[in-house]
Length: 204
Image 1 (tube, helix red, strand yellow):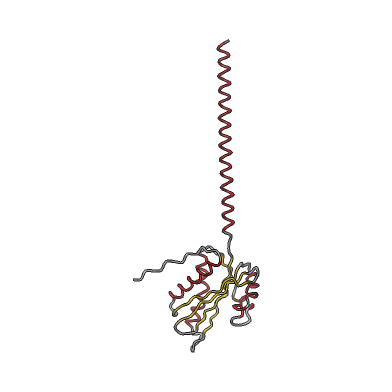
Image 2 (cartoon, rainbow, N blue to C red; image 1 turned 30 degrees about the vertical axis):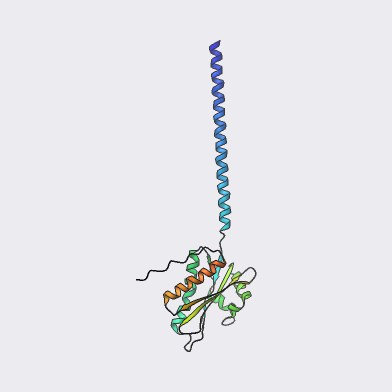
């Protein structure tokens, strides 16, 4: 009789310990799930903070005021600015919206028109799903130097939010690249502030 009671006591104790262990496991599992859900929510919040910024870069126009305007070298340099600028902005995860030259020409009514008419530039960008449009110009008042000029227009309200000037001394290709990097820094400072220009190359 005593041995039977002892066995029952051992069984009850074993059952209680088993239930207790299961309870602890459930608590740990619930805690673990809470941590998982918390991590997911934090990730979603973080991702929403880095929403894609969609920007369209229009072909740069050349405004050459020198005595020998629009030489082939300057036309070539002007055409190189857009792809260089797009490449730098892509490094900072900007989404580049392509506006074909035909559509840009159709919206443009002459040299400097889109540069001065922000509402028309915004409407052009809106048709391609851009958040911002950069209208650019290579302004060359002298043989010795030129300026990269840019107007950054916000598509949603056609407001000019950035007016940039970066000096380019001479037609050297490397100097043009550095000037584009400087312009990228200014554009990024207005928008997402996450672009890091390449370090200066060491002189050999």
